[in-house]
Structure formats: C-alpha cells, structure tokens
Length: 205
Ligand code: GDP
Image (cartoon, rainbow, N blue to C red; front, side, top):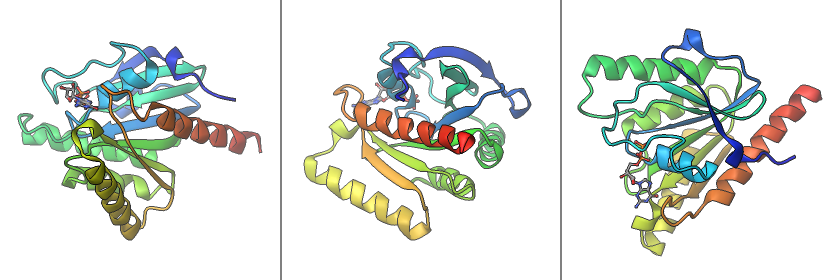
C-alpha cells in the first residue's frame, strides 16, 4: 500500500504533550527554525499553504498534526534555535521536543531537516541524541540543496553520514532536498511509505 501525502489535511494544533491526539502512527518532522520545514511539508503534500512558511521564524511554537489517512499523521514540531526567542522559552521547547521524541510511542520515524549549508548544529545533535535512544529510524533531509554545487552536495552527504554513523545511529538514511526545484520529493515519500508500511506490518504480525 502507498500512502498519498497529497491527501494531507490539517488535523489539530496542540501546545503541550498532554494534549496530543490519539493516533496510530506519526511521522515526526523537526528542524532548526528557517531550515525549510514548512517548505518541505508544502512540497511533499503538494499544497501551497498547509504549513506556513515563516516570516517570523521561531514564532510558531505549536505542534501541528496533519492527517494522511485515518490514524496516520505527519507531525510538524516547533522549529528550534531561533535566537530572538528568550532563552527560557527556547529551553522549554527543547525539553518538550526531547520528551516527545523519546517517549511518544506512536512515532514511526523522525525526519530531521537541516540546511545543507549548515548541518549538524548543536541543537540538531540534541534532537539526534534524544531520538537515538528509541532505536527508531532517522531520515536526514539536507534542504536548500539548490544552493550547493554538485561537489558540495556529495561532500555534505558523505560528511553528515559519517558523523552520524560514528555517533552510533543505527537506522539511518539521508537525502538532499530542494523545495523550489522540487527535488527529492519522491525519495522522501518512498522513505515515509516504507516506515508506515513496516509499522503497520509490525502490528498485524
Ligand atoms: P521553516 O522555518 O523551517 O519552516 O523554514 P521555511 O520553510 O519557512 O523556509 C525558510 C526560508 O528558506 C524561506 O525563505 C524559504 O523560502 C527558504 N527555503 C526553504 N526551502 C528552500 C530550498 O529548498 N531552497 C531554497 N533556495 N530556499 C528554501
């Protein structure tokens, strides 16, 4: 079975982990603010305004659920690392993200979006550390690949992959992505499908 991400519909916005909706499976999507998360969601779902691309990065501190089909959701988590948000609020959200990534059982896999020109910043590592304890699959999307030369693309993929393998991430995949060039959409959709099909299989089996 293939899931059709074009069918994504807004489902619910929540502000705290106590209010998370009941779902079967979730694909969690995180990234530094301005990494290109909203653009990726809009491109993947082929909708211009499903997720709002940020005019004021870091302001949207909500967890947005989008429904793909009954019980299956994409989860747009708040972008982290925006310097103009007060330190205490930034810390609060990093902890909330950490709790969500570590303890939310419904997560089928995590998509971590990083600007391909500035990958693996400190807070990205923090997300990777939170999530790697779960032994669930991690898919790295290196966004804004249209800003790199072909040589830089290969170097970046190789370097990021090596660092993550050295760190000990088990179920790892990586790709380049460009929203304006619409490059990398099929690769991303294939990966998410694979996770969801595997997750459903594990329930039936
Ligand atoms: P978010 O804060 O992670 O949701 O990031 P946005 O999707 O709002 O994107 C932040 C900025 O980067 C916007 O100005 C986007 O137009 C731009 N952007 C996002 N994705 C790409 C991309 O693949 N290529 C280029 N060149 N710019 C991008």
